[in-house]
Length: 312
Image (cartoon, rainbow, N blue to C red):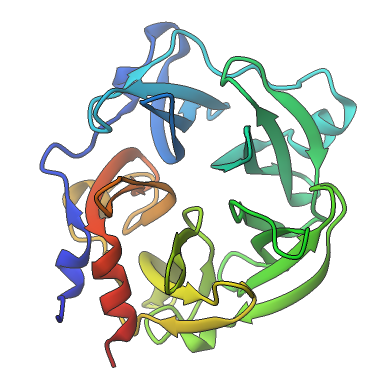
């Protein structure tokens, strides 16, 4: 079965599903986008990336019964602002949270920016009420950190994009015995492998386990007219037992910015995912930011993603 790239992920007619106006007035939130997502005790919990009018960043949980209509909690997640390392390495911004469940613990990996460039950071929770800060888990110049939801050979596995500049980057993998100390870094997807994303590629949603391998909905970026960057979504398939091996790769994107809320905003021409939810029937809700301004959702299925990986 063949799919046009515009209907591999079908947009929700009610997009965007969250805007700054949906948050409590006292915080003056103007942007919400690139949010992580998890299903917890029957509810959809979105860990939103929010910014106020002064561009102060927040992580903020919004809840939903159906995955479409979300209500933000009264206050954002408290951050470890008294921690000396946090003050030093997250002084400018925090962004792009991804939520991965391993056992009974939910891990929040996110980027933090400072005058020393970007680093990956880690928090965890068991109830989405109290969060434990584990500190920074990458060197400078690394972002788009995404944990696989299970161990391989007793090691945690992470996708990331190290040594990146604003217009360059490849997808890497690394391993850890404890989620803090990481090594064995290896480039597994150079941007040159993705014909529609010659500027940079990086992880997006938490990988999805299937009987054929791990589906990875990633982001890819191309430059247009030299200065304009266009963010799209693609999908690849990792080997079931060795996630460093990419065995299939979509030759075209599965979602391209075409709608007004994707084309126009503080960063034009952007669709960017930090999470998805797989339902019991194999359908998938893909949550994505539009133009670095609003939060959106689209629909696809495991079968559709596997099919487009097989297309020539």
